[in-house]
Amino acid sequence: MIWDPLRKKSVALTPEEGVRQWFIKVLHEEMGIPMHMMMSEVGLKFGADVGGLAGEKRKEYRADIVVYDRQARPLMVVECKRPEVDLSREVLEQALRYNRVLDVRYVALTNGARTLLFRREGDSFVPLDHAPSWQELIA
Image 1 (cartoon, helix red, strand yellow):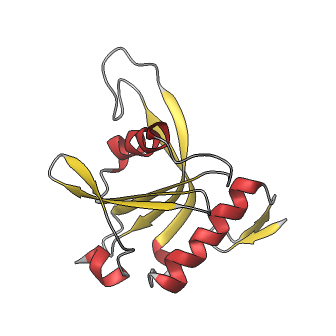
Image 2: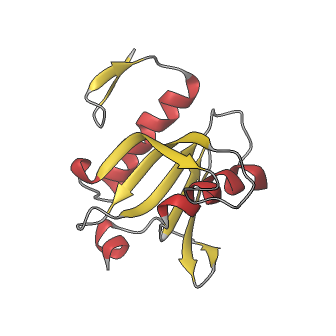
């Protein structure tokens, strides 16, 4: 078991959960994001009536971590994978699917060994070469 400071409870320490808890610390301690501006395991609904395309079945997903701005709008979505999972195009596409509902400015992918960060510019996301600070994120 491991303590999740965002859910305020102990959760099973799976390999993916270990990565999620490590990245929560990175977000807080290295990027300066306040704990109260993050949530883990955020439920999202997709489908023809919510953020989806006509003809799609309604689906429910969970974003690993969502960072919010000062107006409580989603700012960043984080997709965490087990350490042995490659951060492939499919992983990026998963996070971008979440963005159809969240409409974030930043996307992060991590498996604990490697982390990729992206910022929205127009209609696309471009890779970042550094982790932005909280002040840069909300600017």
